[in-house]
Amino acid sequence: MKKKVVVTGEFTNKKIKNLEERFLVVKPKDRDSLEKEILEAEVVLSRHTTIDKALINKSKNLKLISLATTGYDSIDIEECTKHNIQVCNSPQLDEEVGDIAIFHIINAMRKCNKANQQLRKGQWYDNESVGMEINHKNLLIVGYGRIGKTIARKARVLGVNLFATSPHLIEDDVKDDYIVKAVKFKVGIKLADIVVLAVPLTKKTFHMIDENTFHQMKNSSVLVNISRGEVVDSKALIKALNEGEINYASVDVFENEPLKENNEALFVKNLYLTPHIGSFTFATRDRMQQNAIENVFDYFEGKDVRFKINKI
Ligand code: NAP
Image 1 (tube, helix red, strand yellow):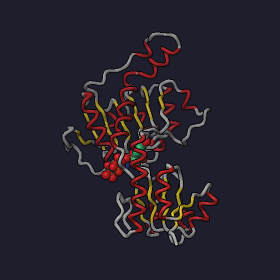
Image 2 (cartoon, protein in one colour):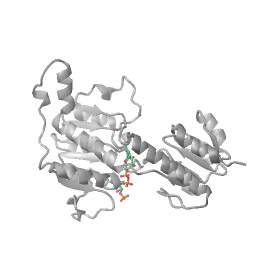
Image 3 (tube, helix red, strand yellow):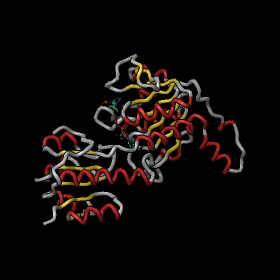
């Protein structure tokens, strides 16, 4: 009898076909059917579907959750660890997310979107499109992991002074060839002209950028978020932008995605949003799905899986 694999989220037909040749693939359409399928499932292949404590507690046989995403905040990792469920992700997208971060940095500093909007309104440009110099500015990377390091490498050619903050970094240490100075968060946030967020969403990073952080930041500074929307308190961000506590925000992620058309954020003039497209290239999506599926094959063949999130 074929082993069952529960698949949640969108995967390309070609990839699913490969799986179907070996396994019984079931695709629950909603939470209710997922609850039923997870009861006996040994393996779940997923993208952004929430797999919370309640679902994990329902499962009797679950051993592996293989994600075709880098972020794993949709999964209750602690609960998985308690139940000896291995969670692994697909983090091979640093270059692409790094590119989007650089785009947002330049967009925020040079007001490219503003200029584009003026042009479409029939105006060539005006004072609102005048941007800020990037060369010699202080860029703080919050979260110096795979994506953070890639951003540092790419940002270096912009001529910025690079700073990073991350729990494993030792203060004042100079890291890597990209000449990144490690600083404490509270120090970095005050000296930064550009703050880029590249942290995972965890209990500790939830709303780590809040009203108090915006008070500490320079009024001329810009915020770039390519991590997860919930890392920033969006109400505080909108207030800070409207009241001039910071100059501009350019973000790929926002709280409560996808944004509803009446979301206040869409009407803030110094806030630019892309709809979570950091990994949106054909090659990246293919690579991530391939990795997640290979982990499923490897698991059933008794091989070690790659990119483990939790220790079990
Ligand atoms: P990673 O390699 O695990 O790096 C994350 C870094 O954040 C680590 O260096 C970690 O430090 C640091 N960190 C954790 N908590 C922190 C805190 N409280 N303050 C400062 N730094 C902290 O992950 P990654 O591959 O770079 O990805 C980062 C995140 O980007 C993902 O989790 C995902 O949410 C997001 N992402 C977004 C997109 C998009 O489409 N926009 C695409 C991919 C990923 P330690 O090593 O010391 O723990």
